[in-house]
Length: 145
Image 1 (cartoon, rainbow, N blue to C red):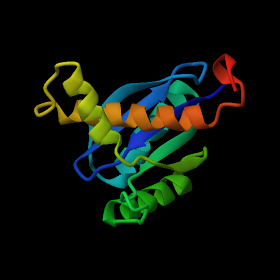
Image 2: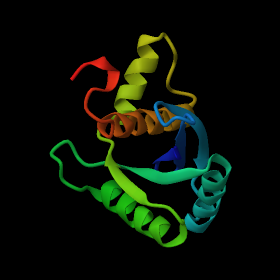
Image 3: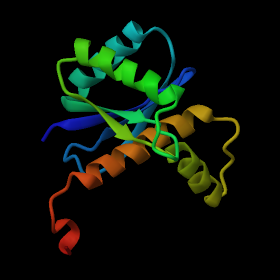
């Protein structure tokens, strides 16, 4: 089974996550400081090779209403760029509230969230990648339907 790479695109930072070798769980991997799209695509291309990834999932930050705001449109353009340069499928996936949920989880664990914003970005990438994985599992996964 090929791994999946999750990308939480942002103007300042890009959080990256990757699945385990069986494609069952998503784990935070790293945070990039946003540079040019070419630099980011080159880095992601290296990760695709390193992890033998079969697809890249880009967070699609829709508004709570489901409408597309400026960041959703920018993520769409970024995903379009990646589709032209990466040799594997690039998918947009709804990531509404992933950063908020990550902050809440860290705070519930008693951790401060203000200083290491990169950690939040890569954990948010893992959170929405996990929802993507969970939604693509067949019926009966986990022993119940």
